[in-house]
Amino acid sequence: MITINEHYLKLQKSYLFSDIAKRIAVYQKNNPDTHLIKLGIGDVTRGLPGACIDAFHKAVDEMAEDATFRGYGPEQGYEFLREAIAVNDFKNRGAEISADEIFVSDGAKCDTGNIQEIFSQDIKIAIPDPVYPAYLDTNVMAGRTGNFIDGRYEGIVYLDSVKENNFVPSLPKEKVDLIYLCFPNNPTGSTITKAELKTWVDYARDNNALIFFDAAYEAFIRDDSLPKSIYEIEGAKEVAIEFRSFSKIAGFTGTRCAYTVVPKECTAYDTSGNKHSVHSLWNRRHCTKFNGVSYPVQRAAEAVYSESGKIQTRALADYYLKNADLVCTTIAELGYDFVGGENSPYIWIDGRTDSWEFFDMLLNKTGIVCTPGAGFGKCGNGYIRISAFNSYENVKMAMARLIETLSS
Ligand code: PLP
Image 1 (cartoon, rainbow, N blue to C red):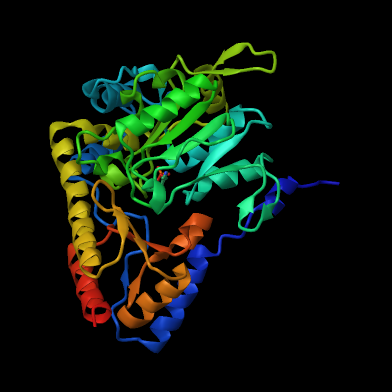
Image 2 (cartoon, helix red, strand yellow):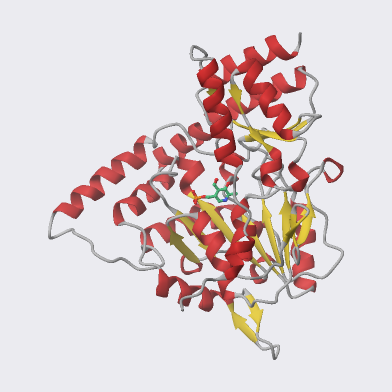
């Protein structure tokens, strides 16, 4: 008899986006003439930068000719892309990461979800609340949690990100082995300072623990004092793996390209306490289960680091940051507390009521769709997330509606 991995049965059904869709459908049926403005989604809305498109086209043409055709590439990614990443994203910011510590992939979602499998079943895991759901669900699938009771999985150490700690979790009181951090944060939009991040690196070093640092939104950081990479913190190379993505920096959500940095110094232990290279384990896993990102996509990603690519991708992030700024100004004017929106495309607003009630009020009174914070964890209740991924015109219209409706 074929039996299932019963840990999957512990997973909570994700009703968040289907519930949102249902409520939108009812609203649209009752208000067919209202232009609905969706400020809920984490997907980007603007086209790929010209430099990426040009490189993409050129590489597609190369694939048409026998002389320049490429079949299977290196599983870890082509040297031209890994080298460009190492220089531009790390060495130029003072972080000594080499090309062979970079693993190119088709998404940070897959990487953040897959990497847990190289670690043992009984490690203690710390996960922020609210959280990007992939971190938690993949550990549930792997059997590292108990059941879901009263809004939380047994066995997980939750790191509350709340107003009192400025949405940057404090170190756990109990000892943990693996820590997930994401900055700039999804969903809260909060950022972490170098000093705060150093406390986590020090904790990991003192406890032989490891940090998974998700920097998918680093392109939105404009405050130069904030770390874009965990490797800007001394000692991080031994205890941190970093995830990056071209999704938000260059609009690759549909094109798919990302990368994971696993430094050679990064170590984990067997049950006898012997050290093992995490880099070797991940390399083995990557080569066994992954066959590389397509050549044209890697060429398009490489173009992000060309002179024109740098200008265009910065302009892309600036466009969304201008939207975020308008949202922040409006929300402040309306007297709501919020975080994010400054070095992040997300604005996390204290709705002063249940998340879904606030969602319904916004939808029904203004025709604006946001994301209820409760969908990201227990600490998200009472909050809503607004995303800056939309056209400036739509955001302007949405904010005018908010002022008109909520200030009266
Ligand atoms: N990490 C975080 C925090 C995200 O918010 C997202 C996407 O929204 C991802 C990773 C996924 O990135 P990718 O498109 O590279 O899979």
